[in-house]
Length: 111
Length: 116
Image (cartoon, rainbow over all chains, first blue to last red; front, side, top):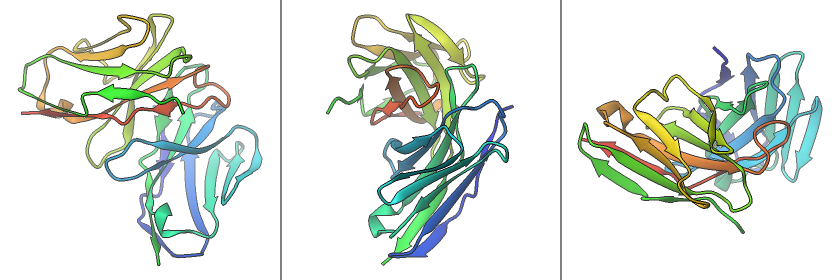
């Protein structure tokens, strides 16, 4: 059974701080890793994806991937109250057209 | 900007009834997906669909479920005989190239299914 694990939170950070979200996955063959943001009652919205080891930056967001450790993270710099949401880690299952999601981490940015 | 649309936004049905959830994927996308999310739980993969065939399906996607692309624009999920535990938000997604390396899925706004 392929799994994606995340700390459920809630994670609370003050406005302007760095929020760090972590994810581990079980399928060693996974190639693509996605971070989605989901507001309550809404659909997942892609923040960024990563498929190479190392860091990928997009504005205030940085995704980090370590395939050897089967670990992917998302850093949010200068956190804003509008970043308060649930962050979903999703992983493509190798050789299948299938993505599985972690349970999500709830982030609360305190003004 | 192109987007995935879903209808209806909310469907209420009686246990045992059939429901059809509809999705219009982004027009140049070739790969289509259904997910469900029970309230307070994680997003769960149901099925992927390409070239008029199911590519993958999960254990959840049993004989009560079916998918169809009846024309060039719609993608539907049918639940033949709904159960109380089918109550969830159902998301449709589409992708241009599939979920391999670096291919984004675009999600629709979802249909909330309530089975009474």
